[in-house]
Length: 467
Image (tube, rainbow, N blue to C red; front, top):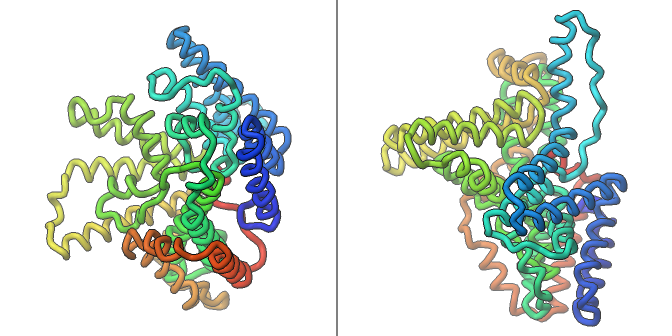
């Protein structure tokens, strides 16, 4: 059940009405209703995995109770190992078997059978949230929940369930201890975020994917150097449009139900350094990696060499989290090495003038673009073919150019949005808030209709559904 579909619109309309009716007339049923709605949403993807999600939630709750009752760190390790093994089986078992099969053949054994494993939607996100709940209860950063209901709602809440953002227990669970106030629902903010996310996904990201990125990455040898280069830029813009669009919609949908999620993207492609990029890109993941990997490894305390090692390990593990492929390993390694080099240079390599700032931006942006090529390519052979295509120049021109003025305009627009005033949406929100409710509804309805009419048929799954 994808966000930008008619089915989801009907689903959310029913949930929205039912939620606020229960808030007003049956407050004891607010959380059971949200849990039921979220399970219906997830069951639309897979009923068996919906049952498994409930199992993970009950496991997380039980471990949290045990940790809070002082049963020792061994129970925490058991809980963390349990959810990580669940994640590991689905994401890494097939990869490990494929990689081990040549070794088995070399030892005279038959090839290992590779299991066909279907990846549950959103598994990485709900596992990370389960992990953080257990650890935060152990640290005293989150309050233990005596009843499993709130933990289940926290893990399954449908706006963030399929593709994030990663919501921290310490920030979300307290919101479940009181009824949402319908008088304080940020309707204008929620509406603008949903409309903006729809436009990013349906009008821009989808067109970049189908018109440029997917054809070039599918068969690099059929395209010229310019198309390959622009496809690399195009994917960088596409993944931001796609993922930030989903995050915007998730934040907006939660807001309309009276719950607050933190911002997940903050104009990441305006960053002047890679460390600044990671403060702006997928903020819920970058802060998770910082708090649950980098700091426990020792963070920036101790010798400089240890700090660099911690940076490298954190980004390498972040790459592995995204998927079981050497391309993701290289993606994490490139980011880790670039952060280590950046830290070693300490900004000394580039002057602080305007030209220096532009140069720092260009270097940072192109490191990000190069890393996203690793992220998008299905295998190392595709990366080699892309590189070869750039070196060789234009092949047979019978295929024609993939890049069109419209696609170039989308790439330019996606990059240009990073340099508009950061408070632009807030200004628009302030301008719309005084409008009477019927007029505001008409404005939002017409805007949504315009997006639907202008969008191509069909909606591709969000990129981060595969993680």
